[in-house]
Image (cartoon, rainbow, N blue to C red; front, side):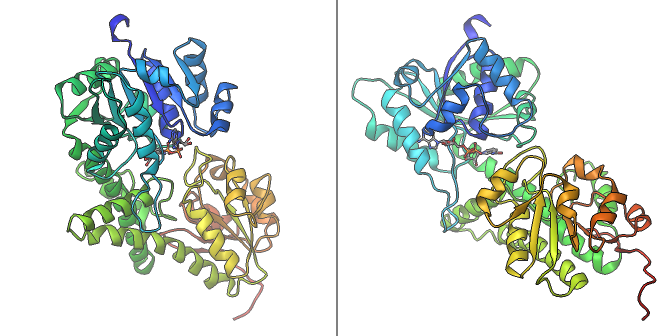
Length: 450
Ligand code: NAD
């Protein structure tokens, strides 16, 4: 370790910031994590995590236990001693679709005010191309005379919630956008332990790094929407979208990942980053129509589920619908822009009574949609329901006792918006089964004559 130990401050200890704190401490650096949310810092100081993320609690506990990581609300002295300050604050969407960069500005002000000569201020948050120039101007405005020079760099984060620790410690690539030899050298030293383990570090200019992050997220969202559009055709043509994804994925130019048809993408990144990218493009004079279509197909995925339910149950007024899964994906308690919540709102607006289960996200979901009923287990949620919708592919639903599920429901109807069940097995268990982009299954019912 020796001379590669760097003093690092991370501003914003949310999903990205906290993983950044843990990762940079784990690879040997001395890290201070700052957050303006006093409650969050109190939780962290008490040794607890403010959200669910596999492996993160051990990573943070080890780093704090070994004295390489500490948390505070503010720490001007830590910033003054830092070789690099990583800004990891949120960049949520404004009603216009542009990202709200006020937290970026606040963080840049704090870093710019206290950092000393040679410090590199690094944007890790996802921001539109051109933001570094804004950050430079903020720093120039607040920086006291005689404190020396600081550099600005970009180091976008590619972690996936639910796999964040693995993604950060075993990254597909590390992206550094920098304009000065000094900032490139500082970031090479920061990531040297990961590069020494064989992980690649790509260096670009700052605008390219900022834009690359949006390009990646938009492309992944595009793959999901492509699969969802395909699912629509498959349902009409009697084909199987999962089999097609397998065929496509066998082509090394395409890759199988992100080709799962379903309820569409959500979370705090894809919807916001697509909008931000589309808005940025428009501002720069290019109409990126493809991105708008990706968003529309994503909205259609929820309408498609509502239509399937209405086709089978006719009027939703007075019907009970159970949602399996509320988090925007498995492995997290994050419900930001979760498609399950959008679906719940649509169903409730149509008069249905909606009860839901999720292994981790029920508390957060109740905060977003207070009228949502939640149940302690999947079977409890399904008891007396006329329909179950699989919204998040948590493993617990894959291994559910289907016989028990059929027995507790008022009508055994399952809309599988994540394609986790096998049609043949569902038929054997007597379900009316509507997967996504795959053949429908209607168990034989001899109780009504035509
Ligand atoms: P988050 O909301 O979980 O965390 C942001 C944190 O910043 C919060 O704890 C908030 O209190 C803190 N904060 C806000 N203003 C502050 C200030 N002025 N000073 C100190 N702290 C402040 O957000 P996140 O999911 O970690 O995302 C952060 C950024 O990283 C966003 O730009 C996001 O798009 C990007 N990103 C997120 C992910 C992801 O999977 N969540 C992945 C890659 C990139």
